[in-house]
Image 1: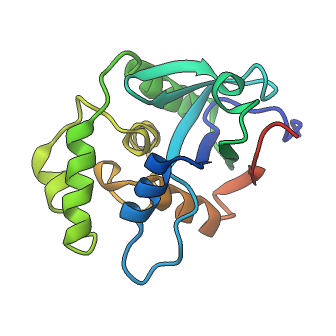
Image 2: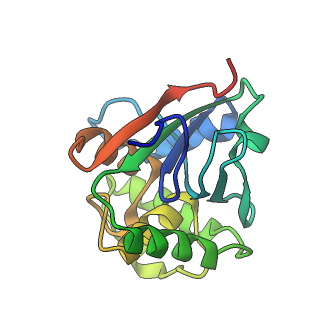
Length: 189
């Protein structure tokens, strides 16, 4: 069995930032009556290795490919968790990585964020996100959910409806499908 500290392609990263934007995302992705949201960002590992060398694809201002450590390693502003899919074929890993890599360079989907906010006002109903069909402008959770959809997997919601909290809830609630490799906390000790 591989060393869990070594990240692998298709691992899901979920982060919590101690910024105002992170707090707002957590507030507005929480459904009414749901427990407090833990994470506000998601990405996918596309090149494995130790945390210092692993490469992730994530949607920031643009979808970018970068070393996990470059953004999260020496910062006390971020906490990171990593989940690994169980029983996944090499072919499915290639589909997930290929889908994430295909989006590198695209602009961030601010319209999708607005649609998430509007749906929040409707108690989380999946209405505005369905209407805007903004697949050309991904947000972080859409990027991860869509990559997994390409491999026939999901996080319990349609890819366009997924939030980082939905992904968190799914991977935590389905230990038969995902293994927690890195518990939520700072990467640097």
